[in-house]
Image (cartoon, rainbow, N blue to C red; front, side, top):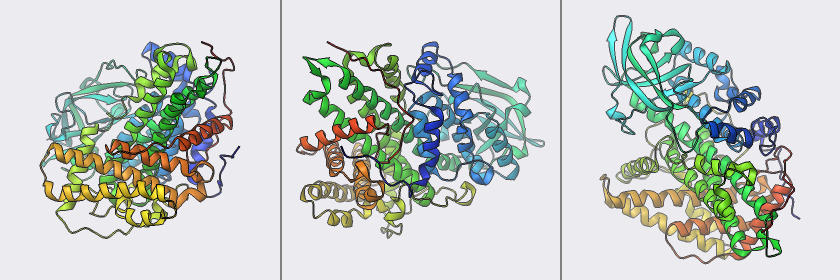
Length: 575
């Protein structure tokens, strides 16, 4: 057996996630801090998982939402990604609820003044929740259609309008609200305790198929008066600020998806190992092994993409106008595909409210289906990628300046500037090191002809897509969206190659197995619609690694993360 442990002395950015893992205990244990059983119970009642929130707060999870510069523990977004992933391994409803607070707080960290930052830090560290008042029923994702108005009045503004389908809408203590104002759209910080209660109405919780324990609701403002100190940043820059804050939160949605996919894969693997069919475990069947291997490969492609995007928030924020949209498009959908593969392994049991993992899988299946929609749908992300690349195609290409060892130095500590010290950019600047430096990476794979051939296929698609963008213009055509989709897949494959070349030795264990890269690249090539032969040997290796990682209580990840001691049901199922 090959140990999945790797050197951890250079992986300190994952310390917070490792601490949280141990503090919360195994989610399969009904008595743990945030258990799958508690999530199912709350989901059945369409109620908030209060015990899980209490456990999260007791573990200090809310402190990870406040930057160190403001008295919290958020020192890097790579670290926060690990924390979000660990939380989502247990219950997406909890991580999404805390994510709604982060979405509301992020523009305050980036553009708020000393008083605003201090107040929001006080609230979040005191376990209060926030809501981002951006979405409206009639406007959808069109920010320019925002109907809420902020009219100047003596001493401040009067706000009127309704925000709908927003996280924590009923339970929030503060909100950041986008409103049409003078001279343009503005972003306003509302401290609900300081407002006239008669001017704020909390709307009913919206009933949903997934994330039924999450407070997805809204609020209405009628003659709501706020002081001049409620304005965030420069007046009239609300759209710009919302676009900037989404670069942070849409990147971290991928971490939520990864955590849920880990649990789905664990449920399916344990089921396949214990389910006896025709006198042997279901895992011995070739189709079952293939489903698990391909699902694991999809998860690893997603992980490489997510890790580089989260680290980009720390070391390459100037690129995140593009990279955050790419990650938001790629990662949740790949994780949904992983869970779908797991559902095929579980077959009818995937839809039962009992049985495997206490019926948790059917909840997980519904919950993760929402993640591609959060912080902008897949179409919204493709439109962002299209716009960014179309704009860049009309300019001379900028040289790549970001060192790949820095961007892909997963786990290496970095000094992440406070959000207000390095605010997000609205364009990526024309240089994209992830795909621009793929040529050199392919040359480094020359000693492995099969891997090099797969990478050259990706490189060819990159070049074809660039040529296509140069002739597409700025119109929202079907061809432009398809080119954006292909670019996202090329980016994901490049992230895998760079991870292999830049970081496998430091990560150790699974990361050093060429099987994962072989299967990961094949999964991307297949999604590009190109013929690619299977690699049964690589699939078999990945299944064996899955078994080892589960036996050793480790995450299904290239990162050597030890989990809380795992709770297992020892009783096998028989046909």
